[in-house]
Image (cartoon, rainbow, N blue to C red):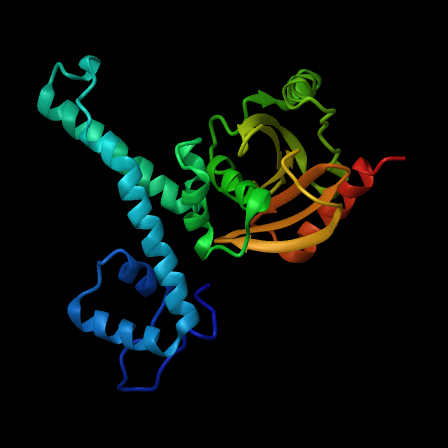
Length: 271
């Protein structure tokens, strides 16, 4: 749900301010003032689909609290215990920071394997994507904003990157050439999938925007045509071809992602 969703609408003069997406998130986090809480709950009672989104966010929050409670409560590491009060604060702040980053990413994948399959299903409840497409969107949201180290191996070592990813994934992997479309290769990294490694290639445009290609062998069934989905601000085009799953993620619009996806498909299609 976005701020311009017709379900979140303005009201006439003299009426309460319109319910926004920020209000819905604040409701899920229990941060609304009593008067505003009543207004938002009235809105949710009339919009079951919005109510379902809020319940999904609440499930995410509850799951995160359960996952991170052991980190919050465990003893301060000895190397941080020189100044106990300050170290304890820093250790608990780190746990809180992990929670914030994970919620912002939209799912529990960024906990790097701490969430089992059942928990991951709960995190997916508020998303239009699922499976490898959702993991691709989350990986994009986690790594693309990083200015200092967005990739593990840079484009200046492209051959070494491709060799490394191919060896780890057990099948040939390569970075498509997207310069004609305005995207230069930044580099790539190896990521954890559900049960096996996956590859992520990152590209940058002249305006600073970034685009990622997620490649995985964790797919089931026959080849699938292009599909489009969204996870927060991240748009994704994804498909399955010859036992590989591909997902193009960016904050670009649907038409731009379709153009890139078609080019990647053309370069990877056998023959």
